[in-house]
Length: 604
Image (cartoon, rainbow, N blue to C red; front, side):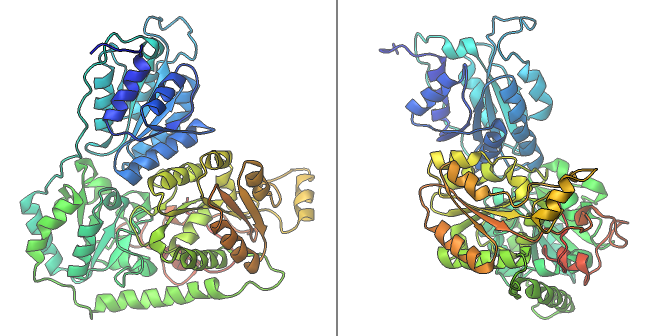
């Protein structure tokens, strides 16, 4: 049809994205993509403008995970793409964070040697790091390129895709507006091999010590209803991975997070639902040597990773596979009284008792707050204010912050806990929090940040304020990376003025992140004791027009040995990196992220 008002390629891009049901775009504008962003806004798509492309790309990928459809990120060419590659890598490695990256590019008429504005061969750069990278051959082909890239991002294994937006295509006038392409349906659900389904059921029936491990793949697949029904019907003990938490509520009696080491080392049958045998599960080396491993994954390449026998693993959608499995187990239920349950109960009781001491013992007067006590007060206060943990979404980053909070902050709903993930990426926190606030406006988003991790994206507090997102940011301020270096300002200053200067892990002394929040349009409080913490959280809960920062000054952990528990080699299990021994610092930490003593350890 003829156009009454002159439109350009920018409007074509916006119309195509609208036809794909894109409702939010994350990014930073500049020449020439500002025209695209404005056309998208005019088409009814919300554009969330960030302060750094890294944070924007992280937010877009997290939005894809939270919504099940690719998040879209729009940036300028050249340096904008280089910055946004952080989100591309994060998307690909996490494998459940679909992302479509769009970027401006030099005009198609410019040669590769012309040195045009922000010129970069972005398709060649991104091809090895994405599922698909395209440069439309013509303006008319641009809608097809966008649709193909959008579809590829979430069909099969989710990941990142890319489309070049040449400046001349963006600015070219349209004689007619092409017929819009149809929306893309949800990916088809793939059934598992029936013979393997039957074999899995037989192996489960013959097992004495079964365990189900629930990964974030189950959360992304929206499999919670079927997984919950499966656990309820079979009464199988289950262990969630950090972002698999909430597929089945943490409060479920069959959750064995508090006896993690005993469960991994003792199970003779393990059903992996959307969890990969990477470093998070110790590559499978801490499983019992003769354990039967049955893995359900949408990606066939995951089956048999790290030497695990794939004979009883199956490619397929988790909901579909479990639905196939149900008829084979209609009369099966793991006994409520068994040696296996007793073993897990003894381990959990011991570890929870140790954790309870750390969480419930009030902080002595004059002593700095500790991580376990802070997170217990945080969980209790916020759950009371929200009336249910289902109304909260937690984002957590920072080694100790993630490790310790994982077991204390209750997760009752799927996709309600985001962290540094498979890539152990620091800097995702505030971008993820923004994405969660947009994806779940009916829930309250709590970003629990280590002070080091917060620094990567601190300026995004202004983004939160600009869009009036009521995110609560809790900063664990120990003055360092992993741990601080001093217990007093005088000690810190002496270290700075010493011959060797500050350690590489040192940050500023009691940095006032609350002042930064107020300067950027939010609210903030610095707290040093339990009463101040609870009062600050209550005040932050009442702030509904922008972000609030609760700056928690904690014990420094000075002098604590740096230990990376999840990567350490131990004797036992399936291989030489086998299970941790329970009972000491490592054991208490391993059983759900808790540990003994005032020292702190790092997972990531």
